[in-house]
Length: 466
View 1 (cartoon, helix red, strand yellow):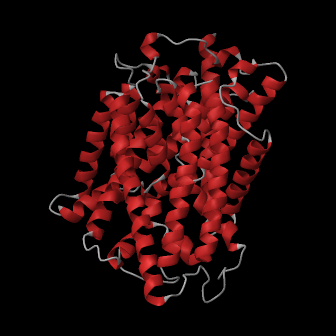
View 2 (cartoon, helix red, strand yellow; view 1 turned 180 degrees about the vertical axis):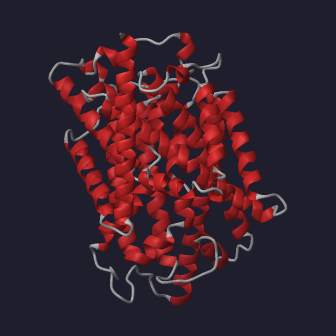
View 3 (cartoon, helix red, strand yellow; view 1 turned 135 degrees about the horizontal axis):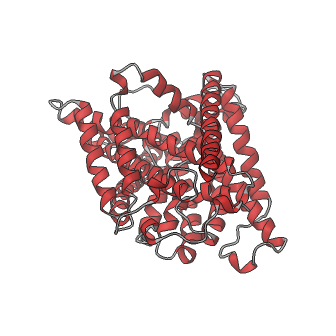
């Protein structure tokens, strides 16, 4: 457990978040967190690198790791529902608060930095239809609207994310249905069953390429851990969270694997096309002429959804760290609707400045920071698995009551162990890939900066106590 310096049993009402998220909000927030533009646009890269069968295997393996991590998170979130999620759990189950401080600020920074890219992506699509308005004005307009949504209430965020995620899910279902329709007619016309085998064999670049691909594919599932933060503002997390988390994990795997399987059968290996997405290529082949515009709208919603989630995740992480004395107390206050307004406005102001990074000399610094935070999701999953292991071990040793386990993650301690080992392998594996040395150097510099700020913060706090 943590020392009393960083622990508090209760928070004043001015620092309490409202439990206003409904079950359907939790479901779609977690689904939307991991279904982003990467699935709609970036799926062609793994298909060309490792082939259709290799891509399916990579997504199944990565999805299994995601499922094991979410089961660990479900056990923790049911026992200790908290908006800080794994950052707060790290403070509880890892003796030195430096771990909580590091993962908290890294995770916060990764979301804040990703906002600029998400807002720019959405603005570029809007510019495609209204090219008389500059892209940066579109970005700022979208940011202002999203900020106002978050300042209204957490339910407003939940409702907006519910509809954004619904659009993405319907697009995937429509794609799967269209692909099955094409496969049926392809078989009727040729009487030949489709195959995943390419001209260069089942695995055109060797089986080992799947492991390299898996390090990239794993990032597609990251964002689903956002449900851990949302649990802290849910109406009845212990009752619904286990079903939602396990159900969402299986749905995500199903959506991804089915989409990729359909694409692998319909979309010839090595295909070169001019469409924005392989999804558009499939829709066009089915004779759906408005497919490109429909998918632009879906990708637009996916980009806004990502920015929407970024404001929520970063503001709640900042609130939690302020509660745990790991960030200025200024950010721990909420308004009468339970909204951490100061944190939201601070994050939005940073995002508005970063939107202009392409026009100023800070562009390279921004790219370095984005690269350095690229693997934060894997680090967060390691923290989740380790904290669940420590919690269950504490229950076995009598440190915690057995009644605290509202949901019991299966196969203890193997799920946690596998999740930790695989995520460590993924992090290290990226360092040996393309631009790996650049990513490693960026991460080392950023972690050193965060550690230096931690020791400065701790020294200043001790000085103030005297």
